[in-house]
Length: 357
Image (cartoon, rainbow, N blue to C red):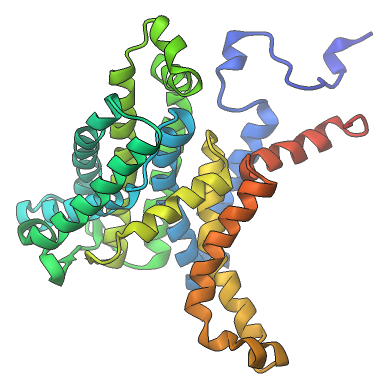
C-alpha cells in the first residue's frame, strides 16, 4: 500500500515541528493567505459601511483575544475588560496630545501602559479566584470609570479627549479605506503573537493553571507569576484595540467604556469559544454583526401586523441590547463550546467524508 498518496485520517502528526506549527497542513496555510489577500483587496469591492464594520470587528477582536487569554487559557475571570480597552484609547491620545508622540508609536506605547495597569489590578488574582476574583475585577471597572471622570489631565474629564488621525510618511489614514489596513496589520500581528504564545513554556503554564492549579503548583509553576502575567498580557491586547478604536473615531469619551461593554467582550469569547484563538475573531464578528442583523430585521418588519402588535420600531434599542443577553443564554445551553468548536466539527466532517461518523 502506498502510504505517501493516502489521505490521513484524523489528527495525524509525527514530529514536534508539526505539532508546534500554527497550521495543520499546507492547505490551511494556503487558505489563510487567500483570506488575508481577500481582506487586503476588500476596499476595492466593499463600500465604506462594510469596511467600517470590518474595522470594528478588527479592534474588538484584538481586545477579545486578550480576554480569551485571561479567561479561556488561564482560567481567570474579568468583568472589567472594557476599562482597559478605554485606558488604551485615552493613553494613546494623551501621549500624542501632550508629548507629541507620533500616533504610529503612541498606539503600541499605549498598549504597554495598559499592560502595566493590568499587572497592577491583576495582583488580587494571586490570592482570590472564582466569584471573589469576579467581584475584584468588577471593582476595578468602577475604580477606573471614576478615574476616567476625575483625571481630566489624562482623559479630558466629561469633555473627553481628541485623538489625532494616524499619519505615516506624510500620508493621513483618515478614511475607512486607509485606516482598514492599519487595523488589519495589527489584527494579523496580534493573532500571530497569541498563537505562538500558547506554544511557549509560558503559554503551557497558563493552560496548566487553568486545568488544575494544584497540580501546576506541584510541577513547580509559580501560580502568582502566571496569574498576574495573564492580566498583563490581556490588558496589553485590550489597550492595543482601544488605541486603534480611539484614533479611528478621533475622539474618546468616558461614557463608552462601561460595564455593558465588558459584558459584550465576555459574550464575544463565550460565543466564539473559550480557549480558542480563532474563536475570538468569530465572537467579535458575531457581536458586531448581531445588532446590524437585528436592526435590519426590525426595519424589514416595519409596517406589518407584527410591528403594530409588538411596536418593534419603538423598541429597536431594547431589541439590540436584549438580543445580546438572549444569545449568551442560548449559546451556553446549546453550544457551550462556541463557534470555533462547531467550525472544527464541520471541517472534520468534510475531511473524513464519507467516513465522518
